[in-house]
Length: 436
Image (spheres, rainbow, N blue to C red):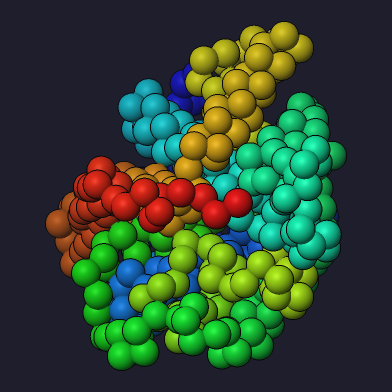
C-alpha cells in the first residue's frame, strides 16, 4: 500500500496544497438524502453513558465539556472533509497513509481497531445490563426456577445473544446486509430518553445519591469524563462512509449534515445526561438504566429497546475491526472464507469473554474513549490538515489546530492513566460484582 494509490473518491486526482476549497466540490455521489445521512450520524452519537460523564465531571463541568466537545467534533469532522478534498482520498486510512506514510496507516489502524473493539465489548456488556432485567420482569421469579433459572442470568443472556444473533450477523461480508433503519434506532433512543425523564424523579430515595453533591460544579474525574463523552461523540471513523452515501455530496451539504447531527445530538445528550444525573447524583452508573429497579415497567421497555439495539449493532463494529485487520495484514490478497471465519470468530469470542469478566461499563467507556476516541477526533484530523496546507507551521492561522492536537494528547494521556489507576485500586467485593 502506498500514498500514491489511485484515487477512488472523485474528489481530485492530485492534492491541492492551497487554502481555498470550493464549497460545491463533490465527494462521491451514491444517492442518499440529507435525512438518511443525518440519522446515521446522529445515531452513532447518542447513548446511555452520558449521565455517568456528568457524575464524573460535575454538573457545571459536564455541561461545559459536552458543549465544548460537540463543537470540537463538529470542527474536526469538517477538517477531515477539507483534508479529503486536498489529498484526493476517500477513506480515513488512505488519508493517513497519504499524509504520514506507513506510520500513519499503523496509527489509524490501531486507534480504529481499539475504538471499534471497545465498542463491541461495551455493547456486549450493555446486553447483560439490560435484557436480564426484562426477562425477570416478564417472568417474575424465573431466576429461582430449579432447572431454567439460568436463562435469566447475565452470563447466559450475553452468551446466547452473542452466539445466536450477533455472531451470525458478523459473518456477513457485505455491510449493507447489516443495515437497520437509523430511524428505528433513533426511536429506541428517544424512548430511553423519555423513560429516564419520567422515571428518574420518581425513583425511590434510597436509590438516589447525595442530593447536595449533584450541584457540584466540578468533580475529581474530569479527564475520565472527557473520555466517556468522546466515546459517545466520535463519528470520524465512519464519517467518510456516511458522507459518501449522500446524494450530491458537496462540501456545503456535508457540513449541513454535520451541523444538524451535532445540534440534535447535543440537545438529546444534554436532556438524557441532566435527567439521569440530577436524579441519581453521585450514584449514577455507567449505564443509566442500571440505576432503576428491575421491575420498573417503563424502564424495562427502554432496556429492551436498548438491548436489541446493542446486539444488532455489534456486528457493525466487528465489520470495522475485521476490515482493519484485512487492510493492514492482508492487503491485496483475494478473499478467503477460512480467514474471514477465523478473524470474525476471534473478534466476537474475545469481546464475549471480556464482557463476561466485567460489568463495569464506565471503565470500558473511559479507556476506549480516553485512548482511541480522542486520537480519532482531536489529534489525527488537525494533524492531517496541518500536513496538507501550505505556510509555516507556527502561523496564527494554524494555532487552533496545534491547540487541538495538544488538547487531544493531554486528554489521551491523563484520561487513560487515571482510568487505569482507578481500575487497579482495590474495591469491595460487592462493588465489583455483577447484579444478575
